[in-house]
Amino acid sequence: MVTIPVDAHVKEELCRLADERGISVDAVVRELLAQARCDERFAEMSEAMEMNPPDSSYFAELRHWESEAWD
Image (tube, rainbow, N blue to C red; front, side, top):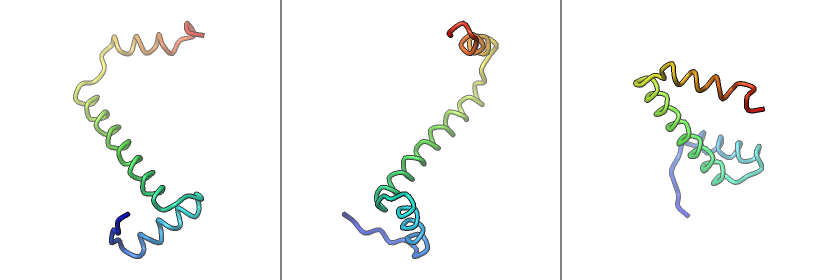
């Protein structure tokens, strides 16, 4: 266990979130960290797709997968 100094308002917000969700502040922080990591991965993927946009073969395959052929 460690102590991390945070602004009183931040602590209050973390406690409020924890109370609303019925979980500990530790669990809230873990959820926020996981969400931040996920957001980072999606931003990286988005950037990679912008640098190398999908071509027509990608869209053809996508249409095939989204078709009713797999029902």
